[in-house]
Each structure stands twice: as C-alpha cells, then as structure tokens.
Length: 263
Image 1 (cartoon, helix red, strand yellow):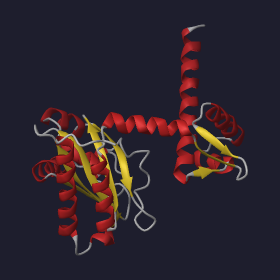
Image 2 (cartoon, rainbow, N blue to C red; image 1 turned 30 degrees about the horizontal axis):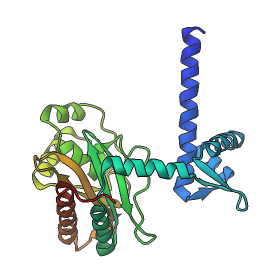
Image 3 (cartoon, rainbow, N blue to C red; image 1 turned 135 degrees about the vertical axis):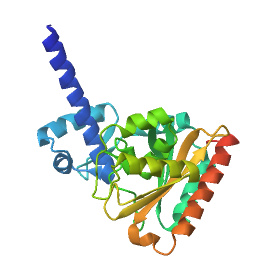
C-alpha cells in the first residue's frame, strides 16, 4: 500500500467515525429517532444511516425499537457515561445543588468541569419550561469567548496563554459576540476579579447565560455552575440571579474540597 493509499484509508476511517458520531448525536437529541429523521438531521444518505445504525446496534451503542421503528441509545453509552462521571468525580450533593438552582430560578442549570483550557458540561438540570441551550454541540467548545463557561476558563489562564488565544481568530456567532481583543481582555480581567461571567446573546440569539467559578484551595479553576434563559427572564432580577448562582458555586466548591461522596 502506498503512502497515498494509507492516507486515503485513514481519511475514510475518520469520516466513518464522524458519521457514526453524528448518528448517535441525532438520536440523543430526540431520545429516539427514525432512520429518515436521522438522515434529515445529519444529511447522511438513508442507506448509509441504516448501515451505520446496524453497526452501532451490534456494538450496543444503539438499540432498535422494532414496534416503533425507531432507534434509541444503547446501554453501552450508559456505562461510558458512568465511567466519565466517576473520572470527573461529580459529588451527588453538587448535582443536587444544580437541580435546586434550576428549581429556584426557573432556568436551565449546568455544571461544567474545566481541564486546562477545555471544559465539558457534565450535568444539566432543565425542563420543558426551562430548556437547555441548543446547540450544546458544534461550536460550543470551539468558541470559549462566546460562552459564559468559556469566558470563565479564559479568565483563569496565565497572561501569556490568554494573549495567545486573543491573538487568534475570534468567531462571531451572533451580532453581539464580543470579538474585539481589547474589549474581551478587559472583560476577562473583570471576570477574574468577580468570579462570574456573563454572555448576553453572544452564542444563541435571545438567550443569556451566567456562570460562576468553582475553585480549589490554591485558586485553580475546577469548574463552573451556570444558568441560561431567554433575555426577558432576567429582567428585574439580575442581582438575585447572580447571588443564587454564586451561592451554588460556593456550596459546590465546598463539596469538592471536602471530597464529598460521588455516589
């Protein structure tokens, strides 16, 4: 096999993996889905969707609900999720705090764990009346300057790391996304001082998000708790929302520092 053949094979394999992930994400978005709906959501041809779905069923990443003619997430994904939660060490008390914040404020509530410059949303508490941000997938982690989670992470970086990020391309997701390096630098300094990060319609038009930092004893950023809601939901209660999210972050930080039980 030539080097060109090897490169094409690797590219094809990468494409297959990407399509399989797209199918899983399409099913996860709706809880279960028909092959036709998956095809429409992913732009993957229907015969290819069926082939990928069969492979995922054999690997236990999908199950086929025959009577409903739909596909649903398989049990192996649950085992992976349990492993991730164990790895990230999410105390039960922290999940309960996030749920209480959702209930008290009537807003979708989140817990994100930060690892260096990256973050992953590991727990969401929402409801039909207060749905989570959408999308939480494409672009969400690639544009930290446009999200409250990401801004909290950027504010925690060393000055040289922060400048390296600000020197790169800053994608605008909406006409309100802050992409001026000087303005963003000033905002990050304020976030570092206050411990809370706002984004107002910078990632999703019509929605705002507030995140408060969870820090270790040495000041290292462990994670963030956050809420999101339509802009109108904050009117007349900005201070109350800030105080409630700060309180949740404080209690979450205490739980992590005390090494609370994760199960």
